[in-house]
Amino acid sequence: MRKKNKKKRIESLTKELEAISFTPITDTTNFYPFSNERGLEDPIESLAKITPQSFSKGTLRIAILIGQSSFCSILPELSRHCDLIIFNDLNPFLIQHVRLLLSQLQIAISPENFEERYFALRGNLFNDFKEDEVTPDLNMRKKTLGIFHFLHNPRRFAICQKAAQTMNFAFCHANLFSPADQKIFFDTLGKRKCRVTFFNATNLYEWDAKTPLAHIKNHEEWQPEHRLEKIFSSMNPCITMGSLRLNSGESCALKAMLFFSVASYFSANEINTQKYLKKQIAAAPWDPKPPIVHDYKRRRPIPLPTGSHAPISLRIRNGQ
Image (cartoon, rainbow, N blue to C red; front, side, top):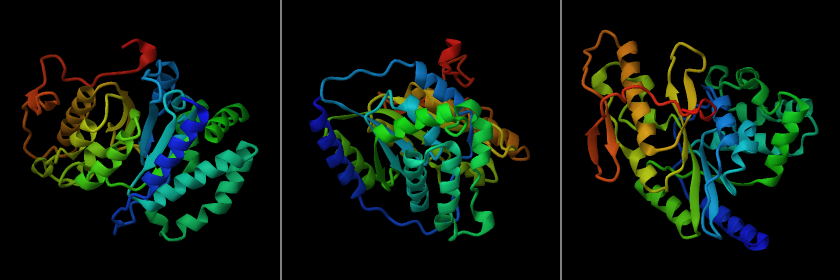
């Protein structure tokens, strides 16, 4: 693909994505400027080792990030797998914060300069929130990611900055749980010969229910609505990064993990959900029936096969 033609296609796609209308959220108190996830170092290492998918000439490789504010640290490794990164989230404050992080990463002259610039500007976003409604903890991310954090040292900062300066980005507020928004979003990609190579689903699985997992009080309240399945059916097979609620007692209850099939993603989430319910709601009746995964070719639930009741580790470095 010629660079000029590629650039024009990306610019046109970006404009169309950013023009997608959205329904403003009424509850803006759930604002996490930095991901409440841990374990991102494992996906970063894996993305550095995985061979990028190959496609026919002229294909635009797309990464879709839902609410991922730790993106600055994953850019160098993710850039191997995509031509365009789409940041999508219903919360306009989160998208604005992503824009702030990206802009300062692109122009800061050092890790220290980034922090100076960031802390001087972030108040414009946080002023609309009470102190207990926002968790602006940049230092927490630095501690949990260690050597992989984009501010760890000048060398890592320079590597992440170069990726931020050379990559292409788009910003969108499409509600992918809405059939109408979902159709517009993926039709926009489809008509431009795009292939999704990376999808950051965060903990969308927990929210794909009448009552979000973290808010339920008994097993009966957990009623998945299966909207997330339709999102996956709109994409080609791709690397998926999801977050499992492995330890609700920690400040970072969610752990980021990579999955290389839709089945493994849903299997791990469904198994983990049942474990979470059993642990958190000990007083409620416990149904010992095996969890269910979905056969996307047959479009109906099927029981998990014997021996697959444990989450699948997909860490490339361990050869599993």
